Image (cartoon, rainbow over all chains, first blue to last red; front, side, top):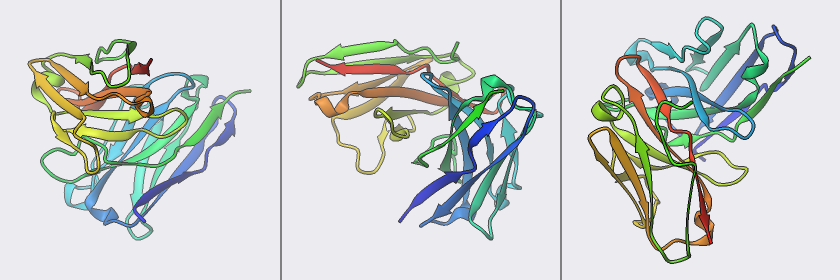
Length: 123
Length: 110
């Protein structure tokens, strides 16, 4: 089955850190760009960052709101993408979704999404 | 405040047609492809339309997309109660090399 499964969410104190995982199955993971998108409670979608495939140099890009605090990485041997978050703020509280885009002329649309994992930043 | 502007809500009766607009600028919609996503209550988003007007696999032809200049539109015909959801437009921003989304539109099928 083609799917993405996130894990690693939970409750963390402000200033703390957390690492999310996204396990992929059923498709050629190494040929995909992997993104993280978050959704604060009752709010809209917010793109967080992405990591491109090996062919594209594993290039990463981030939204300004998380740059310097969040790091997207991947392990193609494990078919897994990661989101490492440090210096967490209360405004980082959200459901974090992992999503996929295909390498190609346009890798800015997401054709596969995980179910998400909730991160709560609170004291 | 989202980079792309969508109406907060739209509504129509079953069987009718509705359109959802998405307005941006030359750095995003004006020079890049637009995608549309449906998020049913309590679930993850799902891709409906990519590259402005291409339906994703398995999406019925009741859903359509178009783009003109710095705006895009999602159309849904033959509305069903199962279409009640939040709809988001998205595109890349050429100058920032990031993805941007609209604030979302809640569709109510009366």
